[in-house]
Each structure stands twice: as structure tokens, then as C-alpha cells.
Length: 257
Image 1 (cartoon, rainbow, N blue to C red):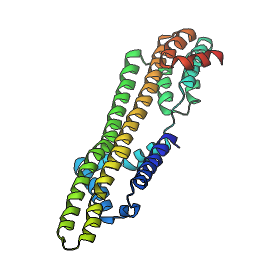
Image 2 (spheres, helix red, strand yellow):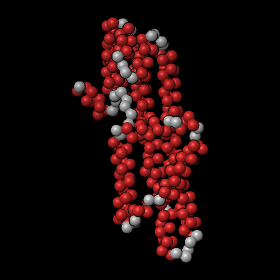
Image 3 (cartoon, rainbow, N blue to C red):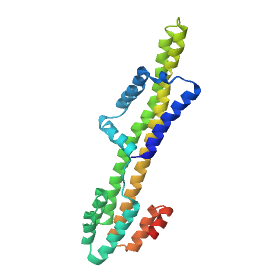
Image 4 (cartoon, rainbow, N blue to C red):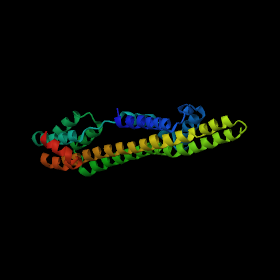
């Protein structure tokens, strides 16, 4: 579970709810099916207009990643794996790298190490892995863009909802008591639009970008390790090269381990 997403999401709802109570606003005003329809159905319609279906099919998976998180092989484990592979290859030959690769569950790491074991040169390994990373970045960019666009459309649709509500309210000026309730209800759509746009959609897009950056760095570390293995670098040299991907605070714990 991605705790930060849940804390932010629930905290945002609580902040608005408590804020309304402190301001004396009636929370029952939020029970407005028309406002929910305009914001959520309207945002969905805009997204369908903006993106092809092949991209939109990824939306449920991306939403799951935002709320449950995504597991990556820890950098310390990657470092230890390549150091161990380097030591084994010095003692047992290149087949030891393939043996180590078969013990790895991550298909990306296994593929990189297998290319080294199969004897491909460094340029080939770099081109293949670098191309795969760039393609992944593009896929992730389009996924984050969906949420960013939701964040742009929702507040604007909130204004549209308010205008629709005001048209309905001003159509019956004879009932002054009802007029106040109608005007208040008209701005519920604006509230929902701003809330979903700036508390949910835009932050979700940013979180996907952060997750993408973390995965790219992990894969760049694997690429560096694979190239070092292919060059026949010593275990000490590989450790030094891969430590550049690990924060200083974690490097200290790594040396102490």
C-alpha cells in the first residue's frame, strides 16, 4: 500500500470537510448528483476525447500503482548481485553470470545479465537496454499525462457546473428562500472540480512521474552493472561504479552491513 497517497487523499477530504464545518457551510450541500455528474462524467468524456483507447486502457493499472505502490529491486541488492556475479565469473568463467541471472526474479535484470553471459559486446548491450528504458519512459509519460489533463479539465468543468447551476437558480427569482440554496448548490460543482483537480489528479500525475524516475534510475544502475560485467571489471571496480546510484546515507549502511 502506498501510504502517502492514502494520507494525502483522506487528509484532503478531511481538510475540506472540517473547513466547511468551521465556515458554517452545510455539508449536506455536497449531496448534489448533478455536480458529481458534471465533474466526473465530464472529465471522463474530455479524457476520452483527448487520448486514444490504447492509452486509456492503462488507467485502472495506473490508479492501482498510485494507491498500492510499485516494488523495485532495492539498489543495495542490485549492487550485491553484480559484485557477486563479478567474483563468480573470475573464478568459474562467464557461465557463472548466466547461473546468477537464472536466480534473479526481475526479468529486466535477468535479461541484462543474460546478454553479458551470451557474449554480446558493450555497444549492443547499451543500445538494447537504453532503447528499452526510453520506450518505458515514453509509456510512463503518456500515463502521467492522462492524470495531468484530468487536473486541467476538472476545475474548468467546475466553473461550467456553477454556470449551469446559476442559470437554474436565476430562472426562479420569485422564491427568495430557495434562491439561496440554489446558488449554494451551484458552486458545489466548482468545489468538486477544484478539489479533484488540485488534490487528486495533478498530485497523482506527479507521483507517477516520481515512480517513473525511480524505475529509470534503477534500470540505469542495472545497465551500468551489465556494462561493467561485460568489460570484465573487478568486483571492487563494479562496487565503486554502482555506489554512485546509492545515496550517501545508504552507502554508509551498505559498508557497515
